[in-house]
Image 1 (cartoon, one colour):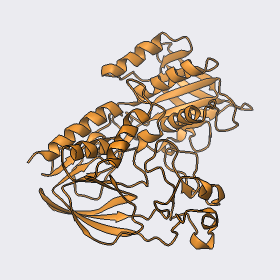
Image 2 (image 1 turned 180 degrees about the vertical axis):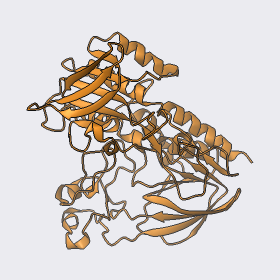
Image 3 (image 1 turned 120 degrees about the vertical axis):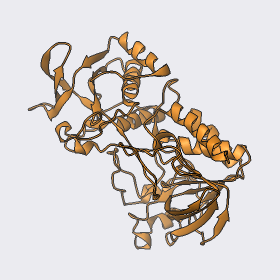
Image 4 (image 1 turned 90 degrees about the horizontal axis):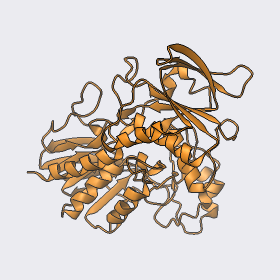
Length: 420
């Protein structure tokens, strides 16, 4: 079976394993299972406490509009059943030294504070009084004892050591019947020896708070595209209806603001590739499931390729979806109203408009995650391919791409790492 290393009982040790995969999102997981099933020993590390990455919290992804279970559950099963894969969660790279065929990598592993006795009963989270700080791109907090919403793996609780008050609180210790709580568990350092390294560190959403004209920090009903994806996922998972964050009411008009910070010399000067497809997908989801909601997408120009082009063709025939070519200049609260006002330049009509909306979704761009290693990046901060012998950047570490493209690139990266 796949080996779960959580850091709760680890000592410093040397593991002579062949390939290290950095990043446990959909690309890193794909790389790891492809290598392992080709007969290679693999160490997979992920900085979060769970594998799955951003995709695990999605409602669905294009072009087939599959739920994340389509790609993740089978790969989780492949990890569980393959003894060639050792994975560390809560793990990050401290240093990399050596050369192709003989790398030594030091890894820091945070404790989960909950061991593998956990049955996911959830009692620890119910009694936990502490809340984790809000993460970039998400406005909904989590308890210090948590399983993230979505398709997380392993499906066991962990406790955030930066928030937990330890035995000074101890409420989780009182309710856990399985001796799973280990509040005194310590962090660990692990040194591993590998021949190859695949960097699938993934992406983070650009910080919407930097766009002051869009009032993201001030207005609860201005959300990012990732937040909106997670809102839709929660509705699907819990069989509930979409509501807006400010008052729990069902929105009637939703605006999608494309290129929010992207293709902008003051923020991200590049196109993030997936934002247009994501907003079209969101609008189609609303059109299918919410006949009372009307969507309007404000865009500079639509950028889709391959099979994703069919999303645009579908949208163009929908009565409740409007495509408006124009840049949104400002989002403000309507005076004396419970709506948001968008000030936008409508290019095709040749006018400036002010329209009311109940909810606004910002199509934020993707920024690359980096590891502690001296790797070269391009002008946008993404890793250049094949720059260091034995180290292979993969998927969104090299540039923005959708899930389907990331999986294909991950498979290609696995093959590259096997090349001598």
